[in-house]
Structure formats: structure tokens, C-alpha cells
Length: 319
Image 1 (cartoon, rainbow, N blue to C red):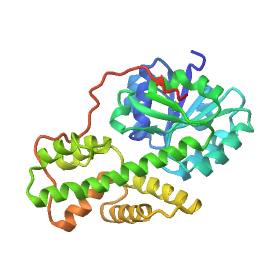
Image 2 (cartoon, rainbow, N blue to C red):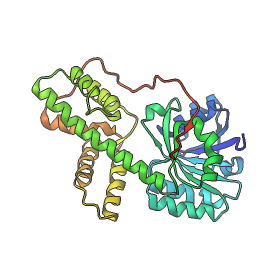
Image 3 (tube, rainbow, N blue to C red):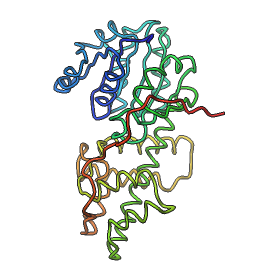
Image 4 (cartoon, one colour):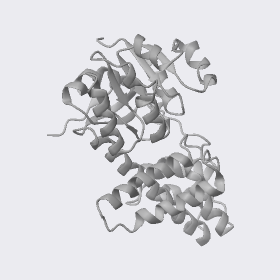
């Protein structure tokens, strides 16, 4: 194990799950977050608390960031006491958030000037799959750096694909999140038609599941919508950020997209009504409230659980 000491900055819904996987994977994990109450559970499992970004850089060769906003990533990487102040040629920065490709390129250049390595490795496939290390990972960066990082990534996710240079993975992550958000809104409308028509919603769920209209979003997020918890461990502010990033790309490349601007408006309405920390699936509740009709059905879980066993990650090689 070349890189034994791993630093992790950001212990939110996803970051805490990444931390757990790295501890299980046998790494010495050093953790840092501005919210001190997030430390205790991980320390009990074997994580080591770091007092500052400098401390985590002094202790580790690899630093992973998993942060909620582009602004927070910029501050952690290039602020007055950011990673760029302490990095040298032994270090590797792995960014695992969903971020703006333009900023990712800019920050990677700053870090590489220090002689350090950089990878963008956003996670995709649902926070519940991150719990057992079965989530997918999109990786952008130099192939030799990908090879260095693979033993670490293989403890965090299962299907791992190297997609080329820095910027590619960030863009693909924004694309996949846009597709998931679009599917979520359309599923809400589809389930509402079933409800209004009088079709049993449990039967409707399974009919869609075995049909050509099925999707990963339906098999997962539709369940917690029908339960009424809406809990997918992904918040409205993050969804708004992601659809906004996609719409920025639409504008940048002058794509004559019709759905993207509509989706931005729908999620903006959701965050205004339910708040930034509401679950992103509550965008469907907008339709329920306006229709004065709830989409509830018995027999669906309040939270999503990955029932597959933890597996070592594999590289998806494209020839």
C-alpha cells in the first residue's frame, strides 16, 4: 500500500460514507471538517482527527475533498490556509464532489504547479450505494495518477471508469445528475397520472419497473416518494447546484435545449418552498401540493438500503 495515510476533508452525507469505506479498507484516515460534531462516530471507528488543513497535509500523502459547493472547494484548495499552501510533489489531491469543470481545471493547474498530482473522481449512483462501497466513480486526470489512486478508489466504489483529462469527469457527473433530476420530475408527473386515473400506486410502481420506462431513479427514488419520507440523502441545494451547472454548459455551448431551463425553474421553486436542506425528491411534492393529491402507498421503505455485499472496485475498461 503505497499511500497508507489518507486525509479526508468534508464529512457530509457522502463524505462520512467515504470515510467509513477507507477505514474498513485498512487505511490510516485523517479527517477534517468545520463542523466538529461530525468527528465522533468516525473517531470511534478508528479515524484520526486533524486540527487544520496544514496538519492533514503534514500527515498524509493523499487528500480527498468532498464538499457541498464550488465556493467551499475553492476556499479549501486555494484559500489562505488551503491545500495549495502546503502541497509538494509527494501529494495527491482527489476531488470527489460535483463541481464546475472550469474551476476544476483552474484549481488542478494551481496544485500541479506545486508538483503534486490531481484527480477529479466524482461519485455517481446514489448515496445509499456509497454506504457499502458499491457506488460508481468517474475519474478524470492523467492515467499514471489514476493508477496510483486505484487501490484507494477501489475501496470507495465498485465500477470505476477513467474518462480522460481533468474536466471530463466533472462534466459527465453534471450530465448524469441532470438526467437523474429530469427523470425525477417526469416520474412525479407519471405517478400523478396513475393516481388521478385510479390505478393502484404500488401496482403502478412495479408496472413501470418492468417496462421500457424503467430507470435507476424509478427503482430507487420513486420508493421513498411513495413512502412519503423523500429521503435519498441528497438535498435540494445540491440538486439546484447541479442543474444550474448543466444549464451553464448549455449556455456556454449555445445548445438549443428546452428542458434544461425548465428544470432550473422547477428546482428553484422547490428550494424556495421547502428550503435548501430539504430532500431533492421533494421537488415532486410541488406537484402533489399543487394537485392537492399525495402519492402515498404502503409497502415502500423510508430510506434506501444497498443489500449487495461490499466488493473491491473494478476498472471499467473501454476499448
